[in-house]
Image 1 (tube, rainbow, N blue to C red):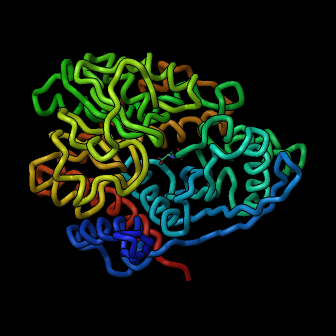
Image 2: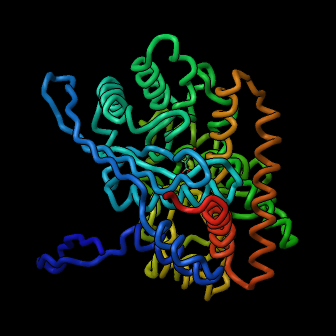
Length: 434
Ligand code: GLU
């Protein structure tokens, strides 16, 4: 249990908060009981394989030196190399990195990819640093990590506050540390690179597009159309923007949005492209967008809507916020946005949750395509990427829906059961060395 210090009535109290790790472990244990998971394999999957914590110095623009803390946690590689993003955020710590790495193991397994799970990042508020400083921080972290990652061993990707530029710096730094003749063969050290530097056409939109697709599949299965549906999005970064973009194209209406800086609402609908262009010219913030009203931060989840898309950080839908939610569908664009208590509230109220490891898996599926493209020296077209992504995601969605129905469990438990069974099978087939 992590603790935070809270000041109440001028008194300072240590208040226990549910850590992300507790959340993912409760989800894992629930599914493991459901499938009667082999107890030895439960032991293995309950703990991470490797945890790397690096303190590294970087020269700032003013000539001073700052020391940063970076993490890479490798949870499991029974199905293939560790795979998962790097996030730059003040909340990155060992608990978060462990939990996020575990979620990646389930996500890649469910998607049927030849990968395990890893995650990491730097405990940093990137808005406080210049582009030059961020480049040096990224390159120095990559250099320090270099012996622990590799294109066939552990393959990072973008996550919260990192993007294709960050990946280009990582690829360049990593490749520069290899002997000249091996450099090009290491391009798949990271995925999510810019399209001109070994990146995949469409990787930018893949996560948000996947979120939209899973919402569409759910609607179709429930005889609903997306046209006219009202949705709210928490987080207007890569995932939130692209999910909103595709939903709007289908005729759905964005009625409230929240980012790290503020919250907005407009029951008549917020123009997604106009908001995106506005934020791009406003240091990435949605604040003061003229065509919407300011909304109190605490009222965001209470906005009347049909679909709620948390696409920011973990632990947002809790026993405090879940009762406010009006939507009948929660589509988890973020990793771990709903904690176990929040989920209980929603399920009791008949709200469906499309779980993160399914809902946002379009990103890592596209990462897999990028990795294959680099490995095989190919260049794929956008249509090919989108077509393959749709087929993979539909297959995952159908398997989860069928399992949930057959076993009478919620979609998260179904997704976990399928993911864990695949890993269990690999262990049973291979046995444990020695
Ligand atoms: N950070 C993304 C996720 O949480 C993408 C990971 C990847 O592409 O490896 O799924």
